[in-house]
Length: 195
Image (cartoon, rainbow, N blue to C red; front, side, top):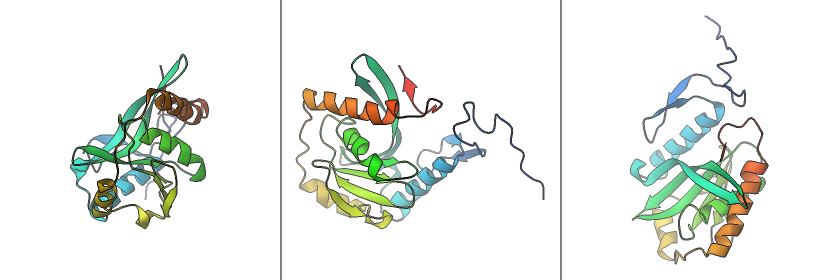
């Protein structure tokens, strides 16, 4: 059996993630760098379709969002957005480690990806998950199995007003997302584009 050989190139240009090769995105079919984080994202995508009943066409992976904090701007990526009946209904943020530190930026994303409050925000490390109310940030449930199924999300959104986010609120959410995702990021993280 031949041993895998890794060069600096295999570890990525910036050395931030170990690149294990290539993988095919379950939702889009696009070829992506195969990293440990991407394997969790792909597992989540399969879980949403195969276990939770979503259609691939209802899930948008890698949603770019430009965040601003005064003169500073950056583009970050939200892992998944789920759209039902033409409305964005759920955002999912993946990240290794603690879920608690990911709650607030996920809520900010739920207020910036669309011109209205997205009802459900999910934070996950691929092994556990917390499901949050987008409106007030309350913890609704815990565990991967607690991520709402398509039918459950349809029930949740049937009671949701999809209220617009005010310009003042959006400005604050931009600053929060910038602080967590850009200011708090590793300088070698190439998933963030400072503009």
